Image (tube, rainbow, N blue to C red):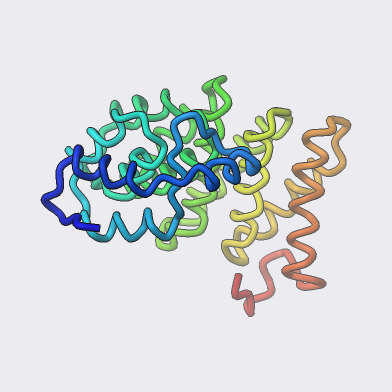
Length: 237
């Protein structure tokens, strides 16, 4: 790959097209990935390209506009988080049509620092992939924002409870993911998340029950019979 930080969008797109693999595209479709604009490039190759071209926010915005799956993933990998505006985040969110792109971009959105605004706004949006973004961002934030006060992470729980009954596949899975990641963050977060999971598991709504029961199973598997009320100071979640 003859790419470098000075490579243009045209050069990058040409390289992506040269690496296309129709067999991989068919495989992606089996995992629920939207493939209408996919070239079928492996994750390893995508990461290798991102390392070669490095971050460039203006170029990332142009890569996104290409409407090619792999170019959009590269845009997420090479955009500069602190240069991302709220308007740009909303513009990208309006284009989301695949859980894979959502989950890749969510990391960028969290790193941008706009997550306190975007998470509740995205959660309130009725579009399936925009709402998924809110809960994917929660999961990323719970894991990666280690210095963020736990109270800010626990503040996500009411949104999780509010939307746990959304039956759409890509929403309910992200709601569940967010709940599990919050519960595994540390001792302080474990008990409130576990308590919510148990409430949802007892719900009459089948989607809420699935979200809750799956989270309870993971907590039980990870923590076993550990005390959940915050007195267990040996937690290493």
